[in-house]
Image (tube, rainbow, N blue to C red):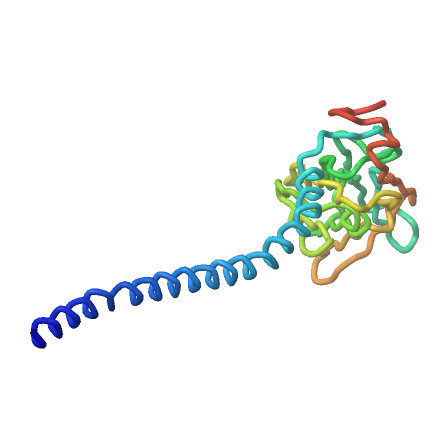
Amino acid sequence: MYEAGDTSTGRKRGAMMPVPRMRRGARGASGLGVVVAAMLLGASLPGSAAAAQGQPAAAARATAAHAPECIQQGNAALNPRFYWRNVIGTRLGEGVIHESSAPNPFGGRIAPGSTFSFWWRPDTTRNPVGAQYHTQRVNLASIMAVADVQSVTGPGSLAGTTLSAQETPPQKLGDTVVTFRIRPGTEGRTATLSSAHHSLTTRWLFANINNLWENTASISFTVASRASLGCDSSSVLG
C-alpha cells in the first residue's frame, strides 16, 4: 500500500513538474522578445530622425537639379581683340577671341538650376613674323562662383578656374564649349566676364612677347529667383 501510494504520489509530482517549467520558459522568451523589440525600436529612432532631417535639403537639391530652364536672356557679348606692335608702334599681328553663350544670360538674369553653354575660340587673324605659338587663357572664376561646370568639350582645357588653349598658326582652333548649371542659393549674386580676365602668352623665337588688348569692356549677368522671373515651368524669356 505504501509503495503503491508513494508511487502514485511520485507520478503525480513528476507529471506536474514540467508544467511550471514551460510557463517560466514562455514568460522568459516573451520578456526577451519585448526587450529586443524595444532595443531595435530605440536604435532605429535616431537614424529615422536624421533621415527625416536630411530629406528637405536633399529634396531642395534634387528640385534645383531637375528644375526647368528659367532664363531672361540678354544680348551682351565681349569678343576681346588683341594685337602686337613693335617699339615704334607698328602692328606686327592681331586677332580676336570669339565668345558667345546659348542661351545667353549676359545682360540678363538666370535662375538657379538653369544651364547655359559658353563658346570660346581664340583666333589669330595675322600672326607676327617669327611667332611660334600662342597660349590663350580666360579666368572663369566669377562665373564658377555661382555655377557648377557640367562639361568641357573642344581643344581647350579647364584647370581650376582657368580655361586655356594653345594655338599654333596657321592651324586654327575649334570652339571650346563649357556648360554651366547655376548653383542653388546664389540668388542676388552677379557674375562678370571682362577683357581683364583674359591673358595671352606668345612664344617668339627664343623669348615671350606681350600683346595689347584693343577693348577693355566687361559683361555680366545676375542670378535671380524663379519667382522674380515668373517661371513656373520651362521658360527662356526675352
